[in-house]
Length: 257
Image 1 (cartoon, rainbow, N blue to C red):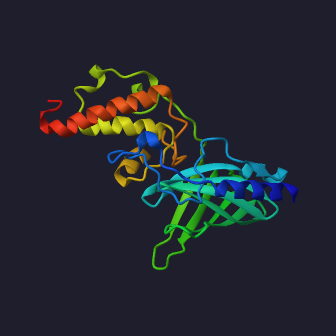
Image 2 (image 1 turned 45 degrees about the horizontal axis):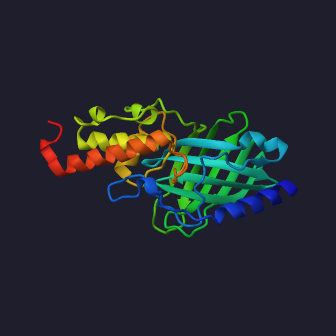
Image 3 (image 1 turned 180 degrees about the vertical axis):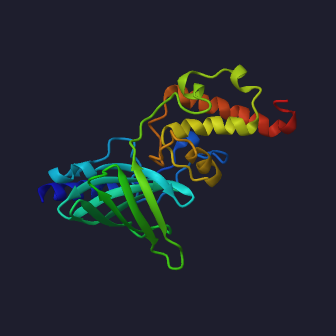
């Protein structure tokens, strides 16, 4: 009971943090912008609070997989007594949930509700069999009437930053030079820049950009705010790529031919 009270107090403090727009990517052409309500804490790339009574430690962690046309990351961050606390990251939103769980034999069944102050909030029902602890299956029902629900089957996956993945890994590994960019088309420059954000697990608000990265096996949505996680090399490369994107936009078909 002491652990659960501690978890509730700490997580309540986290839920009061404000979500701010990341200055490194906040311009009219950037895709890595935030879109959560003020009640959602966005610093998920740090080790999440993990509290559980001894028998339930194996339930903690993150589970990733398809969620309708998007990819979702569901985190279980605290389990104690008959209560569960966690977060979901999907569609450019980072939302907390709270609820209850019960055990029936080897099956753990969970019910978690989002706060209800966002238009996409709803109720999760999901289950984990301790015989297959790396699998999670469930359904989601929106609070808004008339909207369809979703079913999902997720696999346990832990986010890990890797500068070597992607089509343009050099953008995270070394300082780019003019020769690296001057013959690239605007669309490729835009992809290169946003791939830097994707390596950090950024969950994109813009649907077409989000769906492009969700096709990549290495991509795990993990946060909607990457301030403080971009390296010095990445920040400089982002600014350089932006300048070439602007140049490509101004010169149109004459650029990169």
